[in-house]
Figure 1 (spheres, helix red, strand yellow):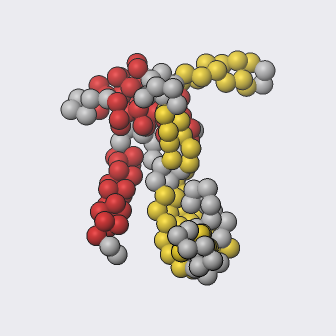
Figure 2 (cartoon, rainbow, N blue to C red):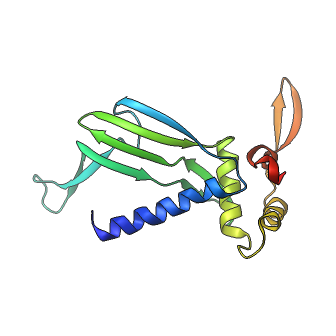
Length: 167
């Protein structure tokens, strides 16, 4: 494995493990074993090769054997703190048209990852956890209106995604 790939994988693993040791509820693993069906993230597992018919061009072909480690997919929309969740982290192994994939699923997925990103990127890391959570909840309130059986109800998703100890 090339050194750059090892380094990238190490950073990815370290960043990913932070969620397990944080005030956020733990992620669940959703396993898939079968014919290739899980994208990484938008396309099925694939690799790039040189196109023999068009010199200087590249084309994509299905992966026969290999791993894919897909990081959390997100973007910002209108401001630097307006986070948008796009896809969950996925680990995938392909072996001739068969796939084993693990997708890491969060409770209240969209709200979980958007709050996590704000907490991780926009709070004072030198402050204690409770103070960082207070900063995040004040500056990034995740309060939405949910319609349940025709009744509108305000829901603070911070209460849904944090471990009981931190409520």
